[in-house]
Image 1 (cartoon, helix red, strand yellow):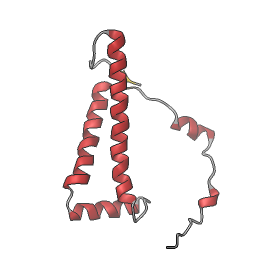
Image 2 (cartoon, helix red, strand yellow):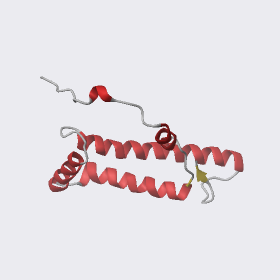
Image 3 (tube, rainbow, N blue to C red):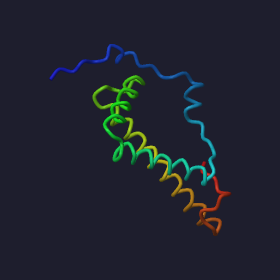
Image 4 (cartoon, rainbow, N blue to C red):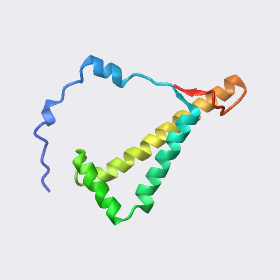
Length: 115
């Protein structure tokens, strides 16, 4: 089996400093908003993995290829990224609510923020 290296594989450069700073900028998000986003990501992940039909999967494949994902495994990687993002958000919510609940004496209120 022959693999073909990308002609641009040797051309990687670091992004400019202003872009790196922007990539590491934190945001504050209310717990309720974070939970809503998490729930939506989980539903999307479940739909794409368990309920999407042949036509939907073909359209998703065409979309991911058009967006630059690898033709062979790009669709699976796209679906994995949704699931992994949901897991990361779930962990952040859990950590935030456990930490906040332990220090303030209450848990899971709308006034908490996820930083």
